[in-house]
Amino acid sequence: MELLTTAILYQNKEKTVTLIDIPFSISLAQVFPGQSCDHILLSTPPLEERYVSTEPKSSVARERVLCHMGPVEESSDYADFIKKGLREIRNSHDGSWCLPRKVPPVAHPPRKKRRIEDVDASVDRTMLVQEPHLSIRELSFKMTKACTKPCTYTISAEGGMVTVQNATSRSAEMSIPNPPAIFHIPPHSEMILSNIGARTAWAFRYEALRLYPTSTASAGPGQFDFILLDPPWQNRSVARSKSYKTIRDEDPVQLLHEELDQHIAPNGLVGCWITNKPGVRETARNCFEAWNVHLVEEWIWIKTTASGEPVFEVEGLWRKPYEVLLLGRKEMSDGVSAPADGNIATNILRKLIAGVPDLHSRKPCLKSLIEPMMSNHGNYRAIEIFARNMTTGWLAYGDEALKFNWNRHWTELP
Image 1 (cartoon, one colour):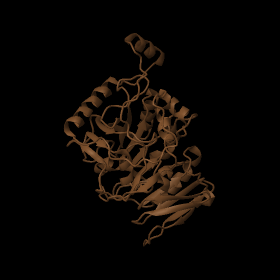
Image 2 (tube, helix red, strand yellow):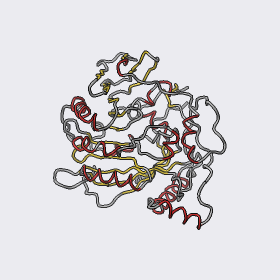
Image 3 (cartoon, one colour):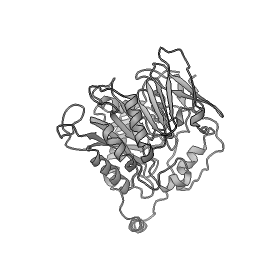
Image 4 (cartoon, helix red, strand yellow):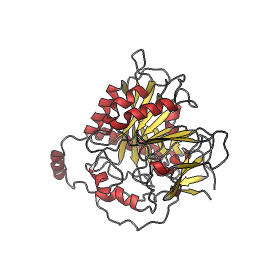
């Protein structure tokens, strides 16, 4: 089997339209850029057909639904942009819309007809593996290969967090004895396994300064050039599927309000995934404003079938086939916000990322798309908050930061 070194299947010259393989983007994030990986992430079968529509059948029914829904996200503008981008990919890309996937045996086959709220849950139920519970007091380390520097880990009982640091150029293993489980730790990566909220803010500040005590050309002590957030925004389908925990009583980004401001490097980038609920966008934009972060780009991830069709109707009311990443840049000391090339941003640039969805909680790994925007590609600091896997060269922070690094989520390439 040919060893691939990129998950990008198509990208135009302007880098505004990209087709990416989602599970392979995560697999490649476990090694250094340009390297091939010898393990691949287990996945669900790619969707061959669109989900059955439950949209209103007539214009009258649609208007009635709109009256009951109240304010909705302005989707017509997105729809035109998405359709144009998908046409570009079809006209320019002759290959498949995803790479071949390694699919484990299924616990039971998904139903042919599913309720709309079961769509995401049924995908997760096709996987036999269930991650073991991590007990902070039972964690231990062993190395997979001899390294010049050992991996280190610390346990903070008061802060309720485990910090793991692999400063070596090789992958490592972290094991727990009961139940027996092994987790792969990528090279040059760190992890803070902890709940996220006001009670752990002080412990995170301490750990960030301990892991990054010095300044770089672009970031001060404890600061990051790129911060990625994937908050567990509450919504009805996720609550029904129980595919991951959501924060009900407080806005998840608001919980980080005091935490993040001091950790964003001058001219640093902040990316935040949002749902299509108007209130969520408003919350994220308010936090950007409080952090002196100016919105410069919107990345729209359109979920497609294996043949490139949106999984839902693009202009649907009940479900949207896309998610949006708000990308902002921190205001510099002179009071302006500038992109990596030094030019002041005047308009919000939109980019399209197309990808065949995998498990519900898996989004495309953005490492290969973000790095070209860094002023120093090889020496920038990045953190993913509410992370569900670790990434080479990055810090993963959250109570599920090891989720997809469990070895039973992976298989060796033939």
